Image (cartoon, rainbow, N blue to C red; front, side, top):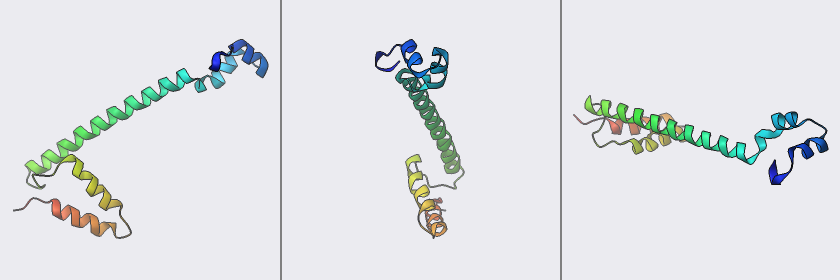
Length: 105
């Protein structure tokens, strides 16, 4: 229990069994929260890595097929996504950026 409180004492004060106390409120314990935060961080890092690898494969395939500029890199996607989210005329902005990404003949 937090701050060294005895679970039996807390359960008695709250009028419930230790099992109910732990089953109902145990997920608030700092140890549980630390474990959950670690799992979330690990999952996020794995997803970020997997998405990055897939985007790099897509970029490489587009460059190899001659459809995408040779100097385009993964971080450049931020500009593409920014255009897609910018203002009411987002289609125009995205179109301008995508046109600029095409490989020159």
